[in-house]
Image (cartoon, rainbow, N blue to C red; front, side, top):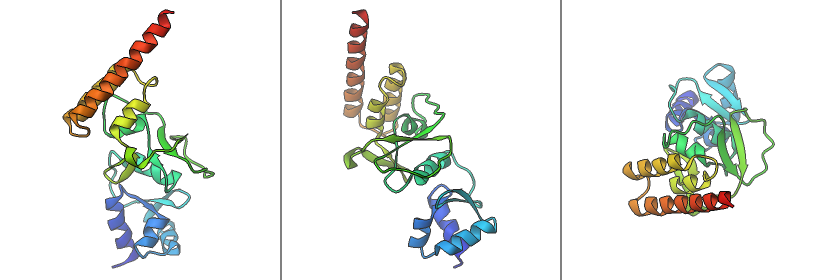
Length: 188
């Protein structure tokens, strides 16, 4: 099997995004990845991150590319998780990616780094893209997204089986409690 075929198969599993580390773990040397990029089989997205030209576009490609560009410890964060799942009518201008690592790479203007640690129990993946769990993402959006949209997102996530009913009720009660506190503070 040729290097190009190996990367094509890898690209189908990773939303078309191929990193040098992933390529090397599949037996494709970095120099061969660069050769394929110079021949047009790969499109360079950033330092060590490429897009396989033969893989058709999909709805999660931008999210996969953003996480890959930030680095190995990165996870999709906050309202970007809701946008990836198409919950709560959220349209993001910039994809938020959480990491604790210092990132010196030049990133596209559509990617925003959020400096925070996301513990393992709050992590999940969206079709292979490392991300925050839906419940944690909804709670992280308090104060940034309207409460009604967050409640709708929570109900939709529960209906789609992304979170269980008990967790959805807990999240909604936390959102409503936070809204009650902010209304009381505003009346003072």
